Length: 526
Image 1 (spheres, rainbow, N blue to C red):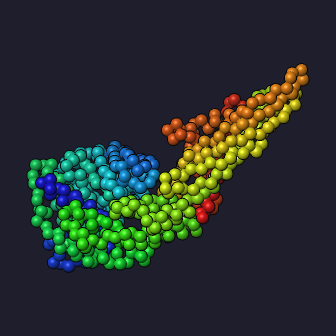
Image 2: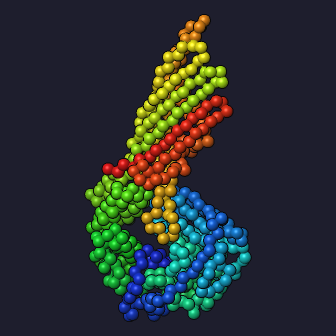
Image 3: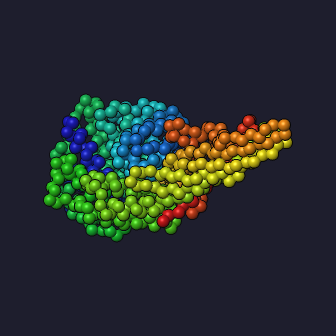
């Protein structure tokens, strides 16, 4: 039984790694009879209409280390998404929105579902959605389903087979949920599930997997798939899908990614099933280099010409990961890709600040600073750092009734890191946009000094003192993060042009200080 479950999981993973090919037709003699219906694509595939609970939406920024996101619907249903390490390529804003109701469901009742964003995000390791519904659903009445976008391409989704809890395997982001009903309820509409052959076959395997889970948890057994002969299926798939996609890989980035994703998924799953034949492997560095060149060139041109900055880094990281899977330690195509990333992710950060302190008796000081920092992503160490002189442009010390000589004194402004936070405007938004930045910095310790000469007192000369810094640090104390090692600047106003973003502020304290400043970020691709 364990071997059977392992086989089904691997098959489902293989099918979901292949990109969509509407209307795929395979030779009838190569396809197991139980799955022949899958390739008769319907003219009226099922679509549903979900209504979202936007007020219960949850979101968070997740790194490659993964994490957990939880949301609770208005009815009390709890949804938990567990993202494993290495499922994401870069820091990603993830949003989970409970679904209030679904119109057009072809079977079942009492649906409990969520929608994930960014829509279509492919995960490099499977996440798990756990649903704790407000009403208990018996194991033999749990049907796991999913859909894309606003309700298209309705399919069945694979469960975590050995879990009595409602756990759904999430391989990419769309809608996912559970409905109360019996698997036999699927029979009348099975021919209309899924809009293309790949998703229909995925759905068929998910149905078998759901049945296997119910049989196992209820103490029964189902070995109906052990007799399927997939050798012919793999050969037909290679001839009709893999090879044509490889031949078209250089036509565009979309074609190249489709070819690469298909080949990698095909070879990996054949190896896991013990069906690999090294002599016929379609994977080679020539294909990788072709895909890398055409995709990175397209991303760079979008970045350079349209200031679309958020796509090129995850695109490059995805290609690098695929090179690693092939055992590549670097080559001309990879170096060229790095250069595209470096040239694209080049910025100038301009910082200005004016600080004022009044002692209430006519004394105090004014001190202003500015800095211009070049920031360029370093693909060799994944850093986004920079530093530049912190110029003390104005310094005036005031002492009532005294003569004062003020001496300016600057320091160094340091950027520890800059993270680009991307988002999508709708489920159909393919390009997405830059939603925010997370800038971590330290402004520097200024070194102003002054000499004061007052009547009946000898002159006094101060040592170099961080007077502007003494205003800035208390004013921004709430933005200091010990964990991040500096001050955090976020919630940027995004313009998306060469003058890309800014933050402005005015801060007053009860100690008589006022500090006003600006960050301006300019995109300057090479």
